Amino acid sequence: MSGEKIKDSEEQVKKGNTEKEKYIRPTWDEYFMEVSRTIAKRATCDRGRSGCVIAKNKQLLVTGYVGSPIGMPHCDDVGHLMKKVIHDDDSISQHCVRTVHAEQNAICQAAKLGVPIEGATLYCKMTPCRVCAMLIINSGIKRVVCEKKYHKAEETEKMFLKAGTELDYFDESIEKYENM
Image (cartoon, rainbow, N blue to C red; front, top):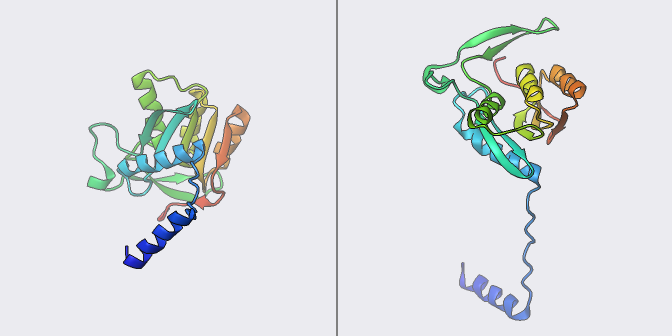
C-alpha cells in the first residue's frame, strides 16, 4: 500500500469513517452447492465433471463425484467409453458409460457407511438422469437442488413431480455436453 493510501486510511479511522462492506453469509443452498462444485474437482471424466452433496438438517452427510468404479480405469487416463442412446423423440446422443454418476456415488457412499439419507436434500450440477432419479426417489431423498437444467430433463422432472420430490434450480438455463 502506498504512503498516501495508508495516510488516507489512518485519517478515516481517526474520523470514524470505517465503512466496511457487510459480509453476507451464503444461504444453506448456496453453501452446499459450492461444496458440490469443490467435490466435482475430483471427477475423472472431463465430459461431466460434477459433484454431489447430500445434506439433512443443515449437515453434510455424504458426497459423490463422477468416477469409474473402484479399481477400474478412469476416462482421464484411458479415454471415454461411448455408447449411443436413442431417445423417445428418436434423437440419438452419445454418452460416456465408463463412470458412475455423482448422485449414484453419493447414494452408494451413504449405503456403504450406513448413513441414513431419507428426508435429505441432494445438491448436484444439473437435473439428474432417469436412473439417478429413480435411486433418489427410492432412497427417500425429498428435495433436489440443481445448478442448471439438463437438456434431457423432462422425464426426471415428471418422475419427481409424481413422487413428490421437490426440484429446485439455481439457474433455469440448460446444460448441454459437447459432442453429443
